[in-house]
Length: 327
Ligand code: ADP
Ligand code: MG
Image (cartoon, rainbow, N blue to C red):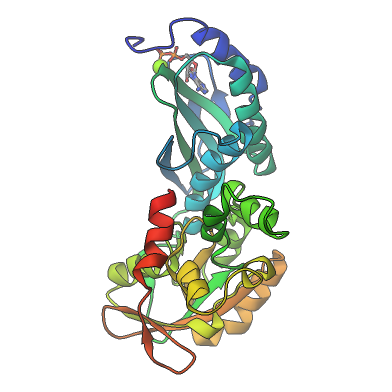
C-alpha cells in the first residue's frame, strides 16, 4: 500500500538501501519482493524484537543521522543480546518528512556500520511519509530452550551488571552544553552509539538465571526481572560501576540517581548463582567485558538500593525528571 508513501523518490530510496545491504547465506530472498524468505537453523528458536525511535521523543531534531542509524539498530540488538540470541536479520520501517537521499545515505552509514559488525542482513522494510520515525525489527536465533529470560532469577543469586552505568543519562544533561567538559565526548558517545552486548549474551547461556538490558534505568529494569521471577533484590550503591567521565562530573546522590534511574546505557543486568561467580568472571573475561556484582536477589517483591551506610535510598525526583525532561 502506498497511500501515505513519500510521493517522489520512494523507489529511488529503496534502491539506495538495497544497493548497500549485504546478504547472508541463510537469506533466500531479501529486499525486492513482497516479503523476505529466511532459513532458520535446525533445532533453533526464532527470536524477534522491535523498537521505534521517534523525533522529539527518543531523539532531538538536530541528531546526526549516522548516530540515529546506529542507535535504531543498537537498541534492537541489545534486546537480542539480553535473550542470549545470535542476531541474523533485520527490517527497517522509515517514516520520513521528505525523500532526502543525502539524509538517508548518512543514516545508512551508521546503520550498516553496526549491522556489518554483527553480520546482520537487512532483508526488508517500508518507507512512508510522515514525521521522522524509525522502526527496526531484529531477528536472531537460539538453540531451543536456551533463552535468557526475565523469569529465572532465584533467591540468593548475585545481581551482575556489565560495563558502567549512568553515562548516557549524564550525556543527556550535557546536550546543548558540549565543550564545557573535556569528558563530554565520552559520555555523548555512550548516548549516541550504545554497544549492544551481543557476545556477553552468548557466553551467559546456561550460566545466567535471568537477564535484561538496561534501557530504562537499573531500578526499573531489575524491577521487571523481579516481577517476572516473583523475587526482590537489594542493590549496594557503593558497588555500582561508574566511568571516569561520570565520576569526574557527578558525585554522591546526583551520580546515584543517574546510575540507578537514568536509562539508555544498554548494559546487561543478569543474575547467576553465587557458586558460579568464577564461571561468570571467566565468561565475561573471554569476551573482554567488565562485569560487577552490584547486589543480590532476596525473597520479596521490591528492589531496594542501599547506601554505603546500609540505608534504603530513593532516587530524588530530580534524578527521574532530568532524564524524563530530556527524552
Ligand atoms: P510493498 O508495497 O509490497 O510492501 P514496498 O514498495 O513497500 O513493497 O517495498 C518493496 C521492497 O523494498 C520490499 O522487499 C521491501 O521489504 C523493501 N523495502 C522497502 N522499504 C525498505 C526499507 N526502508 N529498508 C529495507 N527494505 C525496504
Ligand atoms: Mg511496503
